[in-house]
Image (spheres, one colour):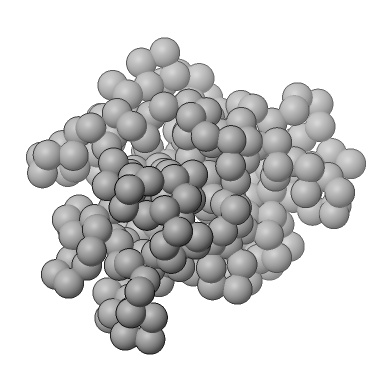
Length: 240
Protein backbone atom coordinates (compact mmCIF):
# COMPACT_ATOMS: atom_id res chain seq x y z
CA UNK A 1 0.00 0.00 0.00
CA UNK A 2 1.12 3.53 -0.79
CA UNK A 3 0.49 5.55 2.39
CA UNK A 4 -1.07 8.99 1.85
CA UNK A 5 0.50 11.73 3.97
CA UNK A 6 -1.27 14.99 4.81
CA UNK A 7 -0.82 17.94 7.17
CA UNK A 8 -3.42 19.81 9.22
CA UNK A 9 -2.00 23.21 10.03
CA UNK A 10 -3.77 23.99 13.32
CA UNK A 11 -5.07 22.01 16.28
CA UNK A 12 -8.75 22.62 15.63
CA UNK A 13 -8.47 20.75 12.31
CA UNK A 14 -7.57 17.49 14.05
CA UNK A 15 -11.11 16.28 13.43
CA UNK A 16 -10.42 16.26 9.67
CA UNK A 17 -7.67 13.69 10.18
CA UNK A 18 -9.91 11.67 12.49
CA UNK A 19 -12.70 11.61 9.90
CA UNK A 20 -10.26 10.26 7.32
CA UNK A 21 -9.33 7.48 9.75
CA UNK A 22 -5.70 8.53 9.61
CA UNK A 23 -2.95 7.85 12.07
CA UNK A 24 -2.12 11.22 13.63
CA UNK A 25 1.27 12.65 14.55
CA UNK A 26 0.85 15.68 16.83
CA UNK A 27 3.63 18.27 16.72
CA UNK A 28 4.21 21.27 18.98
CA UNK A 29 7.96 21.34 18.65
CA UNK A 30 8.48 24.48 20.76
CA UNK A 31 7.74 23.10 23.28
CA UNK A 32 4.99 20.69 24.37
CA UNK A 33 5.71 17.60 22.27
CA UNK A 34 9.47 17.97 22.76
CA UNK A 35 8.80 18.20 26.51
CA UNK A 36 6.51 15.15 26.56
CA UNK A 37 9.09 13.05 24.72
CA UNK A 38 11.81 14.27 27.06
CA UNK A 39 9.80 13.57 30.22
CA UNK A 40 8.97 10.02 29.15
CA UNK A 41 12.57 9.43 28.07
CA UNK A 42 13.63 10.52 31.55
CA UNK A 43 11.43 7.94 33.23
CA UNK A 44 8.06 9.62 33.73
CA UNK A 45 5.29 7.00 33.92
CA UNK A 46 2.83 9.04 31.88
CA UNK A 47 1.86 12.50 30.71
CA UNK A 48 -1.82 13.41 30.85
CA UNK A 49 -2.57 16.36 28.55
CA UNK A 50 -5.50 18.62 29.39
CA UNK A 51 -6.69 21.78 27.70
CA UNK A 52 -7.14 24.18 30.60
CA UNK A 53 -5.40 25.08 33.83
CA UNK A 54 -8.70 24.52 35.64
CA UNK A 55 -8.89 20.93 34.35
CA UNK A 56 -5.29 20.36 35.42
CA UNK A 57 -5.97 21.60 38.94
CA UNK A 58 -9.14 19.50 39.23
CA UNK A 59 -7.29 16.36 38.14
CA UNK A 60 -4.48 17.11 40.56
CA UNK A 61 -6.96 17.22 43.45
CA UNK A 62 -7.92 13.65 42.51
CA UNK A 63 -4.29 12.52 42.29
CA UNK A 64 -2.25 14.43 44.85
CA UNK A 65 0.99 12.64 43.95
CA UNK A 66 0.85 13.70 40.29
CA UNK A 67 2.97 16.63 39.12
CA UNK A 68 1.50 19.65 37.37
CA UNK A 69 3.51 20.91 34.42
CA UNK A 70 2.79 23.42 31.69
CA UNK A 71 2.62 27.08 30.73
CA UNK A 72 0.48 30.06 29.93
CA UNK A 73 2.09 32.85 27.92
CA UNK A 74 5.25 30.77 28.10
CA UNK A 75 5.62 30.69 31.90
CA UNK A 76 4.58 28.30 34.67
CA UNK A 77 1.01 28.86 35.90
CA UNK A 78 0.50 29.60 39.57
CA UNK A 79 0.29 26.40 41.59
CA UNK A 80 2.11 24.24 39.03
CA UNK A 81 5.18 22.21 39.98
CA UNK A 82 7.10 22.57 36.72
CA UNK A 83 6.99 24.72 33.61
CA UNK A 84 6.88 23.51 29.99
CA UNK A 85 10.64 23.55 29.41
CA UNK A 86 12.16 20.23 28.40
CA UNK A 87 15.15 21.30 30.48
CA UNK A 88 12.95 21.21 33.60
CA UNK A 89 11.73 17.67 32.94
CA UNK A 90 14.92 16.00 34.12
CA UNK A 91 15.23 12.46 35.39
CA UNK A 92 15.61 13.86 38.89
CA UNK A 93 12.30 15.73 38.60
CA UNK A 94 10.08 13.27 36.73
CA UNK A 95 11.34 9.69 37.06
CA UNK A 96 8.55 7.42 38.29
CA UNK A 97 6.03 10.26 38.26
CA UNK A 98 2.75 10.83 36.45
CA UNK A 99 2.52 14.32 34.95
CA UNK A 100 -0.56 16.42 34.23
CA UNK A 101 0.29 18.88 31.46
CA UNK A 102 -1.59 21.92 30.21
CA UNK A 103 -0.11 24.24 27.58
CA UNK A 104 -1.47 26.95 25.34
CA UNK A 105 -1.32 24.93 22.12
CA UNK A 106 0.25 21.47 22.32
CA UNK A 107 -2.00 19.75 24.83
CA UNK A 108 -5.01 21.17 22.99
CA UNK A 109 -3.80 19.51 19.79
CA UNK A 110 -3.46 16.17 21.55
CA UNK A 111 -6.87 16.32 23.21
CA UNK A 112 -8.51 17.36 19.96
CA UNK A 113 -6.93 14.35 18.23
CA UNK A 114 -8.61 11.90 20.58
CA UNK A 115 -11.03 10.80 17.85
CA UNK A 116 -8.20 9.08 16.00
CA UNK A 117 -7.35 5.47 16.71
CA UNK A 118 -3.60 6.10 16.61
CA UNK A 119 -2.10 9.32 17.99
CA UNK A 120 1.68 9.62 18.16
CA UNK A 121 3.79 12.42 19.63
CA UNK A 122 6.44 13.84 17.32
CA UNK A 123 9.21 16.44 17.32
CA UNK A 124 12.71 16.87 15.92
CA UNK A 125 14.08 14.95 18.90
CA UNK A 126 12.38 11.69 17.79
CA UNK A 127 11.88 12.39 14.07
CA UNK A 128 13.29 9.15 12.72
CA UNK A 129 11.60 6.98 15.34
CA UNK A 130 8.14 8.53 14.84
CA UNK A 131 8.49 8.35 11.04
CA UNK A 132 9.34 4.66 11.22
CA UNK A 133 6.59 3.75 13.69
CA UNK A 134 3.90 5.76 11.91
CA UNK A 135 4.71 4.16 8.56
CA UNK A 136 4.68 0.67 10.09
CA UNK A 137 1.25 1.19 11.67
CA UNK A 138 -0.24 2.95 8.64
CA UNK A 139 1.01 0.30 6.21
CA UNK A 140 -0.23 -2.56 8.37
CA UNK A 141 -3.68 -1.04 8.85
CA UNK A 142 -4.16 0.53 5.40
CA UNK A 143 -4.60 4.05 6.70
CA UNK A 144 -3.03 7.41 5.96
CA UNK A 145 -0.72 9.53 8.08
CA UNK A 146 -1.78 13.04 9.09
CA UNK A 147 0.31 15.56 10.94
CA UNK A 148 -1.70 17.73 13.30
CA UNK A 149 0.26 20.88 14.03
CA UNK A 150 -0.51 22.65 17.28
CA UNK A 151 -0.04 26.07 15.73
CA UNK A 152 0.06 29.26 17.74
CA UNK A 153 -3.26 30.32 19.25
CA UNK A 154 -5.26 28.88 16.34
CA UNK A 155 -2.87 30.25 13.72
CA UNK A 156 -0.22 28.68 11.51
CA UNK A 157 3.14 28.16 13.25
CA UNK A 158 6.25 28.04 11.08
CA UNK A 159 8.27 25.93 13.49
CA UNK A 160 5.70 23.12 13.57
CA UNK A 161 5.45 23.14 9.77
CA UNK A 162 9.22 22.81 9.41
CA UNK A 163 9.27 20.03 12.02
CA UNK A 164 6.57 18.11 10.16
CA UNK A 165 8.79 18.35 7.10
CA UNK A 166 11.68 16.94 9.13
CA UNK A 167 9.61 13.85 9.98
CA UNK A 168 8.26 13.57 6.42
CA UNK A 169 11.86 13.60 5.18
CA UNK A 170 12.46 10.36 7.09
CA UNK A 171 9.45 8.46 5.69
CA UNK A 172 10.43 5.71 3.22
CA UNK A 173 10.63 7.04 -0.33
CA UNK A 174 8.34 5.29 -2.77
CA UNK A 175 6.04 3.97 -0.04
CA UNK A 176 4.23 7.26 0.61
CA UNK A 177 2.25 9.82 -1.36
CA UNK A 178 2.33 13.44 -0.22
CA UNK A 179 -0.42 16.05 -0.30
CA UNK A 180 0.54 19.55 -1.40
CA UNK A 181 0.77 20.60 2.27
CA UNK A 182 3.08 17.67 3.01
CA UNK A 183 5.26 18.62 0.05
CA UNK A 184 5.28 22.21 1.30
CA UNK A 185 6.42 21.08 4.75
CA UNK A 186 9.18 18.97 3.22
CA UNK A 187 10.37 21.87 1.08
CA UNK A 188 10.31 24.15 4.14
CA UNK A 189 12.44 21.68 6.10
CA UNK A 190 14.91 21.17 3.27
CA UNK A 191 15.29 24.93 3.03
CA UNK A 192 15.76 25.34 6.77
CA UNK A 193 17.74 22.27 7.85
CA UNK A 194 21.26 23.58 7.23
CA UNK A 195 20.66 26.41 9.73
CA UNK A 196 17.80 24.79 11.60
CA UNK A 197 18.02 26.58 14.92
CA UNK A 198 18.52 29.95 13.27
CA UNK A 199 15.47 29.40 11.05
CA UNK A 200 13.27 28.11 13.87
CA UNK A 201 14.21 31.20 15.88
CA UNK A 202 12.64 33.35 13.14
CA UNK A 203 9.15 32.04 13.95
CA UNK A 204 6.82 34.29 15.91
CA UNK A 205 6.45 31.84 18.79
CA UNK A 206 10.19 31.33 19.08
CA UNK A 207 10.66 35.10 19.16
CA UNK A 208 8.21 35.30 22.06
CA UNK A 209 10.12 32.62 23.95
CA UNK A 210 13.41 34.37 23.32
CA UNK A 211 12.02 37.57 24.84
CA UNK A 212 11.20 35.78 28.10
CA UNK A 213 14.50 33.94 28.32
CA UNK A 214 13.85 30.49 26.86
CA UNK A 215 16.45 30.48 24.12
CA UNK A 216 18.01 27.27 25.46
CA UNK A 217 14.66 25.50 25.00
CA UNK A 218 14.69 26.36 21.30
CA UNK A 219 18.25 25.06 21.04
CA UNK A 220 17.21 21.83 22.78
CA UNK A 221 14.12 21.36 20.61
CA UNK A 222 16.17 21.63 17.39
CA UNK A 223 18.20 18.50 18.12
CA UNK A 224 17.51 15.77 15.58
CA UNK A 225 16.92 12.18 16.73
CA UNK A 226 18.00 12.69 20.32
CA UNK A 227 15.54 10.01 21.46
CA UNK A 228 14.30 6.72 20.03
CA UNK A 229 10.95 6.59 21.85
CA UNK A 230 7.55 7.30 20.31
CA UNK A 231 4.90 8.29 22.87
CA UNK A 232 1.33 7.28 22.11
CA UNK A 233 -1.73 9.18 23.28
CA UNK A 234 -4.66 6.89 24.09
CA UNK A 235 -7.60 7.10 26.47
CA UNK A 236 -6.44 10.49 27.66
CA UNK A 237 -2.95 9.39 28.64
CA UNK A 238 0.40 9.64 26.83
CA UNK A 239 2.84 6.78 27.42
CA UNK A 240 5.61 4.91 25.64
